[in-house]
Image (tube, helix red, strand yellow):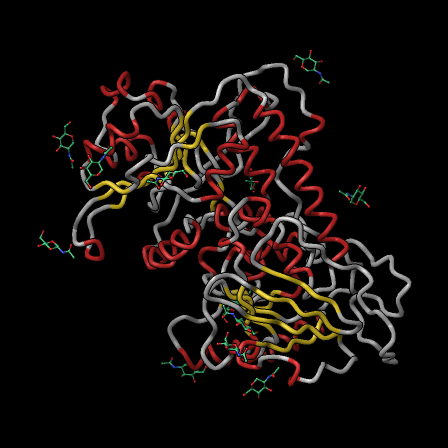
Length: 467
Ligand SMILES: *[C@@H]1O[C@H](CO)[C@@H](O)[C@H](O)[C@H]1NC(C)=O
Ligand SMILES: *[C@@H]1O[C@H](CO)[C@@H](O)[C@H](O)[C@H]1NC(C)=O
Ligand SMILES: *[C@@H]1O[C@H](CO)[C@@H](O)[C@H](O)[C@H]1NC(C)=O
Ligand SMILES: *[C@@H]1O[C@H](CO)[C@@H](O)[C@H](O)[C@H]1NC(C)=O
Ligand SMILES: *[C@@H]1O[C@H](CO)[C@@H](O)[C@H](O)[C@H]1NC(C)=O
Ligand SMILES: *[C@@H]1O[C@H](CO)[C@@H](O)[C@H](O)[C@H]1NC(C)=O
Ligand SMILES: *[C@@H]1O[C@H](CO)[C@@H](O)[C@H](O)[C@H]1NC(C)=O
Ligand SMILES: *[C@@H]1O[C@H](CO)[C@@H](O)[C@H](O)[C@H]1NC(C)=O
Ligand SMILES: *[C@@H]1O[C@H](CO)[C@@H](O)[C@H](O)[C@H]1NC(C)=O
Ligand SMILES: *[C@@H]1O[C@H](CO)[C@@H](O)[C@H](O)[C@H]1NC(C)=O
Ligand SMILES: *[C@@H]1O[C@H](CO)[C@@H](O)[C@H](O)[C@H]1NC(C)=O
Ligand SMILES: *[C@@H]1O[C@H](CO)[C@@H](O)[C@H](O)[C@H]1NC(C)=O
């Protein structure tokens, strides 16, 4: 079935339209999902406006019937002119057409190229707009996995370029993480949330996405809620008397692309520094060296680190346990007393929430849910700040054998595509912090399948995440 036929079939099957999460409270003449019937140039069609507080890589400007949204990330510099359906787009001569894309909103027929965009769109309650996804094997969202399994969403082909183009021609907008689809420049939107340097910056890209769906009011509320919760966690964690040292490290095995040379890296990514400091930890970046090809020098550099977050890209549960970590870092359990993180049993990985192919929600939900990520980092460095019942989301302790939690389509509990996916954070203001140790819950781990074909894609994601 072609996508066009499929869309048509889906249209016939479509359940009655359900109300958007927050209905515009404006007195304007349009409901936010409708096209304008009788255009009046003097009417402000966007009474709810985005005010960017933390994000540094996008801007939004409003006119009466269109918005000018710019991605100003280094090397991107693209402008999106978003015109309300039923109103005339502005004259293109007002813009530099070489980097301007004209789009009619609200968007209801989009393709997403990265799993990161899925999490933002789902938190806005706009999953119904996702008609096609790329890197489908890495999708962690249970409901998008469900939609893929039930042919409600198309998996964009990677092998057959003709088919890929056909599939993408059927959508109005392509949300892409980095690259413009060749020949489809005039509908590609580049999103750069992973380049915006800070957890709250990243979360605020909710407002960027919101402009395409007229969900400004909802997005502003959501980011304010995330910010408040984040700051509450930050206050609780940074008031702790100690500042454990944390490092985010990874091992790169010898391979063709690295000249068969093993290396170990200590991350210096800005958002990890901010998360670490806001969790009440001291961020360790190796001081002078952050990439080592000499194992002994690397180990000497990290020996006094209290908490390690191991970011090594490995697929499959047997290669991501504590023994694998020790092998990769050239350590043994006999080294326990020489390394603080071993003594502390504080070795974590970011694959606590994955799909059955090890498609990590760390690259999706964890980009937008800044408060929940900070909660996870606090659990790693100051567990007593959180109530004893708090479970991990993404950051699991492999030194304590905490297993990955597998998300499948069975975890899609609401097939209502307009129901916003909730944040995974607990409400910080209601926390009971009387000094418990954390406990881990029993989670059943399904068998992991190794999808080596996706390694390259994962590497690209990692590169983007560590900028
Ligand atoms: C970005 O694009 C605008 C036009 O849209 C142009 O004036 C400006 O010079 C560009 N900036 C860079 C850094 O390329
Ligand atoms: C138009 O945008 C392109 C790409 O950013 C830039 O190289 C060019 O200088 C811009 N032209 C004008 C007139 O601003
Ligand atoms: C989805 O489409 C594929 C390929 O066209 C087909 O094999 C499969 O049975 C379909 N699944 C459902 C649930 O309709
Ligand atoms: C590629 O896709 C097109 C369009 O669906 C199809 O006609 C063609 O047979 C496909 N080619 C291969 C090699 O599968
Ligand atoms: C995009 O470009 C194609 C081919 O150049 C054209 O047919 C199409 O109408 C354009 N779409 C928009 C939204 O400008
Ligand atoms: C968000 O909206 C809810 C419901 O309208 C409201 O109770 C809450 O105070 C709002 N939060 C913020 C931070 O504006
Ligand atoms: C790759 O390794 C070989 C042998 O160890 C060495 O001679 C060569 O300079 C290396 N190349 C690079 C680009 O590091
Ligand atoms: C570590 O961070 C400090 C302070 O920002 C910086 O000066 C230094 O260059 C960083 N070290 C490495 C190896 O990135
Ligand atoms: C691992 O450590 C041992 C010493 O404990 C050293 O002899 C060996 O060369 C190291 N292996 C690598 C790959 O660096
Ligand atoms: C940093 O790397 C250099 C070689 O590039 C090495 O000589 C030096 O010992 C390293 N410093 C530390 C602290 O490991
Ligand atoms: C996913 O669903 C299964 C039951 O189908 C449940 O046991 C598991 O806890 C859920 N996982 C998460 C992370 O919610
Ligand atoms: C907080 O925890 C303490 C110790 O377990 C308990 O006695 C108290 O009732 C709890 N308070 C709340 C509000 O849950």
